[in-house]
Structure formats: C-alpha cells, structure tokens
Amino acid sequence: MIKHRATTSKKTRHLPPMRRVVLLVLGGLVLIAVVYAGAKYRQWKATPEYWADNGRMLAAIPDDEKRQRSDALIGRLGEEWSAFGTPDPQELIDAPDPASRVLGDERTIVIPYEDLNIMLEVEAPAMLASQGAPLPDAVKGMMVTSDGRGQLIVAFEYDGPEVQQVFSLTMRLHATPEGIITSSLVSARGGRLTLPRDRALRTLADIVGGDRAIGDIKLMKLFTGEPFGPMDVPIDPGDNGVRNGRITGIDVRADALHITRTAVPRRPRRAE
Image 1: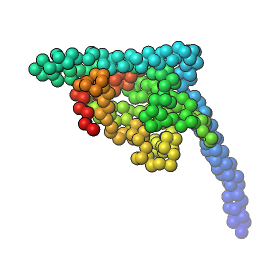
Image 2: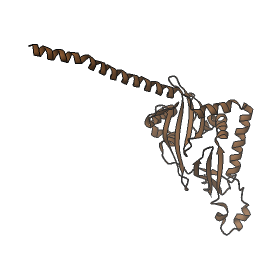
Image 3: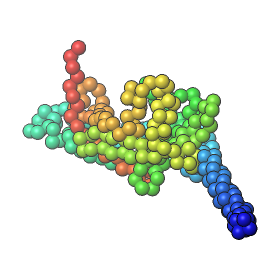
Image 4: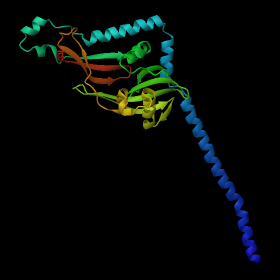
C-alpha cells in the first residue's frame, strides 16, 4: 500500500506541468488565430494603392477638363479605328481585286489607363445603360489598371446595405485572329484580402443580375471565360460601306491597353 501511494503521488506531481503545457499550446493557437484574423481584417479594410492613386488623380482634375479629356479619347479612338479613311468607290470598281485593297489592314490602338479611367468616370454609367447592362446604384466607381503580368485589374467600389468595400477583379483577356474573345476571372480581392473565385463570381452575379442564374446574365461572359465575338464595328460610314473593324488582339501592358483592329468585309444588310 505504501508503494502504491508513492506511485500515485508521483503521477499527481506530473499533472500540473502537463496542464500548463496544454494551456500554453492552446493559448498560443488562440493568439495565432487572433493575429491571423486581425491581419485578414486589416487586409479587408485596406484600400488598394491603385484605387487611392486613381482617386487622387480624378480629384485633382476639374470636371470640365475631365469631360474634355473623355471626349478627346472617344474622338481619337474613332479616328484611329478608321484611320485609313473611306475608299473611293470608283477605285474599288476598277480594282481587279477590291478585297485586297480594303481588307486585312491591321492597326494597333493604344489606350492609356489614365485616359480610360477618366472616360469611365464620365461615360461608363450611360454607356453600360445603353448596352442593357446598367450599373447598380450601389456601384459608385470603376477603374482599370494592369497587374504588371499581362492581366487586367478591374476595380469598383460597392456601397451596399451590408458591405462597403473596394473589390478588385484580375482578368485574363484573349482575342484570336478570327475575333473570338475570351475573358475570365483569375482572382478577386476585397480591399487587399484575396477572395475565393467561386464566391466572387456568385457575388458579381448577385450584384449584376439579382436572383437570375449566372448563365442568364450576359455580362457574366466577361468573367466566366465563355467565348464571345467577333466584335465588329463599322470603319466606313453609311450603309454602303464595305469594311468593318474587328478586335483581333488584346495586349495588357503596364501603362496602357493595346487593341489590335483588323479590317474585315461588312456583311450586306438584309432586305426588309
């Protein structure tokens, strides 16, 4: 009995240190969790530098000047889209191969992000509304920039009843020589916090389409990689023009978008 009591006493003496070790480990895990959660919260609340820089740039430019620069960019894009002018109809008639004279021309159009972001502030709401995809009231701003690795970042501020946040969408864009365009969401962030891609897609669908399924929202093609196009815009003015311009290349550079436009035949209008 004496030996048994000694053994029991020995075990009892070892329990308190074990409890301290367990409590120390648990305390360390809790501390790590708190620090991790705090870091994630700070990332969630942090504003991306490019969003802050764009806001300062826009705030420093008077509204009249922003309107002028937006109009100038739209005018330049129109001029560059049809830069080699309207062909002389008689030259086309006399040419043995008219198509060789008017088709296949390629032109690279450079769109600096600063000018594009000014235009987005001035024109984006009306432009999207005219295409049947109006911005929700909770979306307060939009901008684009590059991630420095050939991918486009589209950022916007969402001011909803439960969430007030700047969201950033990193997009991979590609256009084939035939004009087929794919655009897919690579990653998303709220503030500086990375968000799961599927959750981001669902959130986008909720913002843009409400209760509709993702497949029923045309704008979601920009995020899901579903091919679309070709996107043809007239080069020659009027109904008798013979050329359209087609987007056949998209190159995301560090400071500007480079869009390749190729001249293609315009389909004749169907008789009504």
